[in-house]
Image (cartoon, rainbow, N blue to C red; front, side):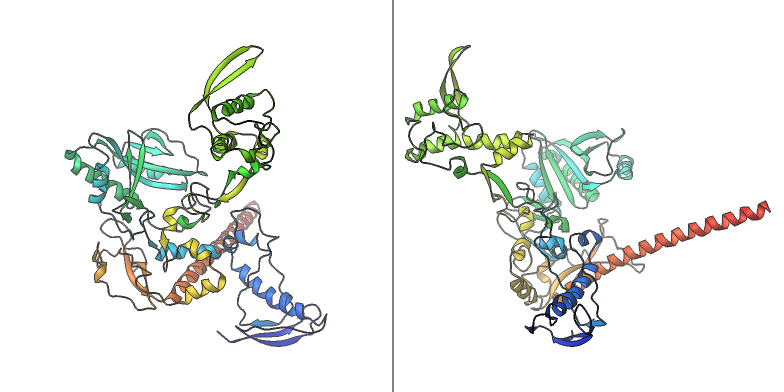
Length: 558
């Protein structure tokens, strides 16, 4: 990389065909009188060209969020790096859109973590390793003697399509049943599937009652399921309809947790396979705020201290008045006292309910008098339940007036599943890395890495098997392990004894990781251009064919 940026023939706005040389990696100040061309040179020329170069490398989807600047009026700019600048006012208001996702920088991180990430158990934090068939069988048998179970092969997980060929192959292989989106079908019947919707397909390999004498049968069924799905086995425990997902790739023996092979979608908070199931990838939740329910604590309950919908008319003759009179009688407080004078126990009961303890509700209506015995749900649980159940936008908006955003209790605002957050590179999860400043993130990428930060992936069946990774020579401080597909002379993947693509272990430098990612991106863009060129050539051939056919018809007519 050159140490200087060369600008030749800049003519933007009031610039008069000037040539400038600017040092790189330095703090450069442009000064001068108003109208001398400082902004024209810095923003309309240098930045405009850097931003244009960056945007042109992105997909058409990303370009719609990044307004591309016009090519500046300049002869040439040399040694200029692509530049990024995003105006907060012009980006999408969608909370799922971030600077990283819009600029597609986050896609590089997902690819990096999926290829060289080190998975850990989300419970105990221990590094997790491959799980053998014997270990999977022992886990299934631990469900209990006499328990009914199904062994399933998850062949499709969250992908679009109709999969007619896959179902035909399963039927020809002797399988009888299949689960499609949770519904059990016979493979002999017509199975409806929308090609534009994502589906989950599990082939039913075996149904059995767990006993000590079925170990061999269960082992064979697990091996069959793993061969069909590429190492994944789904055990459905029928009494409580509980699904346990096992993986031959990664599992924690102590906690009994298995995760599937690392893929880029596991690190996307906009994908169901990576997003936190509680907040669906938003990182925050709307929760009822007690301070908004009772904003003025100097007012009594009868005078309207509660501002929440449905509970703000205690003075009336409705159900709320009946509940509060019963509460005041049972817990010995007055509805006329200011809220600030009520005890913590009383406020806890008002806000969160009686926890199943029934109250004596006395009603006096024109239709009659009587007594009801009923538990008090609590204001906050009542509001949250109504918010989840309502279908009315007006009611939802009214309830949101008493709610505020708070970090998700499951992911802590990190947006991802705990399994995805437990994958580290250099000791950091993808969320921890994204929280770093630009300077700290760059320092982290450039620092030397060690063997213990980037653990090898033991997938080479010919050289490394099982726990033999300790025999692999240690890396230097500037090397990392990567897995690489084994190809034959024709460039086709070589299959191992299990029918899966064989992998080889290679040593690479950190700088080579970026080169590999850039190469994959350029190959993808090249493939798109080749497809477009092929489509144009095909259209031209069709046009030429039609023209020749018309000429032949004219000659025959003559």
